[in-house]
Length: 332
Image 1 (cartoon, rainbow, N blue to C red):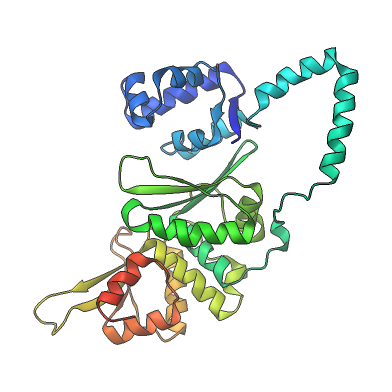
Image 2 (image 1 turned 135 degrees about the horizontal axis):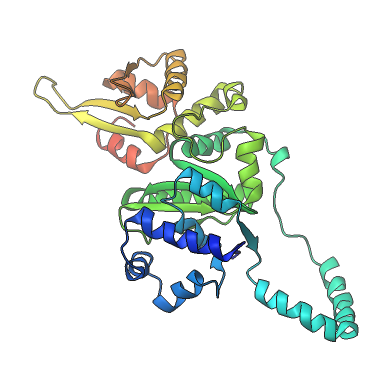
C-alpha cells in the first residue's frame, strides 16, 4: 500500500487540527477512538515520525470541504510503501556501489524473463453496457479526485443491504475488466461502506475518457456525451446504474388501492440530470412525472404496476435491495 507524506511540518499540523475541527472532536483521545487507531500509532502519524497509509488518509479526509481538499492535495506526495527502506538503500549503495551494480544486473535478467503485470490503457477502453452501468452508479454514489500524485475513486453503499452487491457484482467486474483491486471499508460508525479504488488509469477513464468531473459533483454532473450518443442499450444501462445508486422502490398501501400500489422514485439534488433521465424514460414510452418543490424535493416518479413493469423491461437494474422488493411483489 502506498503512503502519504506532507511537504512541511506546518501543513501536517494543520491537517490533523482540521480532523478535530471537521469531526467536532475535543481531544486527541476522541480521535484515537473514532478512527480505532492506537494512541502511539496515531501520534507517530501526527508528529511525522511515520508516513500515513493511503487508505487511512482517504478515510481521514472524508469530512473535509473542497477548499481544504485542494489545499492538502497540493502539499502531499505519494510514496512507495517501502520508501523508508529505499532511502536507507541509497546510503548503502554509495558505500557498496560495485556489489550493488552486480546484483542489479542479475535482477535485470530475472525481470526481463518475467511477464509484465496486467493493467489497462484508459484511452483504449470502449464504453459498453457494463461500464455504462458502473458510470451511472458512480454518478449517483461515487466520488473521484487527485491528491498530489495520489488518485482515489470511491463508491458509497449501505452496509447491510449492499455489501454483498458491491463485493460480488461491482468489485468482481472491476477486477475482471480492469485488473483493479477495490478495497471495501466498513469499519465506520453508521450504516454505510466505502469502496476505494486507488488507480490513476481508472481515474483517467472517468475524467479524461468520459469527461466526468473530479471532486464534488452532486449539483453539476451530467450523463457523459459518449454514453448519450452511444447505442440505446448503453444509455439505459447508465440510467439503471443511477437508479441503483439513488433510486428507491416503495408501495402505497392506502385503502383506496385494491393492492399495494408500486412507485419508483429517483430523488437527486442535481436538477439537470433529472431532466436528462426523464427525457430518456419518456423516449422509451415510460410515463413519469417530475416533482420540484423549492429546489429541495426534486424527483422523478414512475408509478402504477403497468408502468413500473415497462420501466423494468427497459432499465436493467441489478441492485438486490431493489430487486428483492420487486420479486416479493411479483413484478420481476
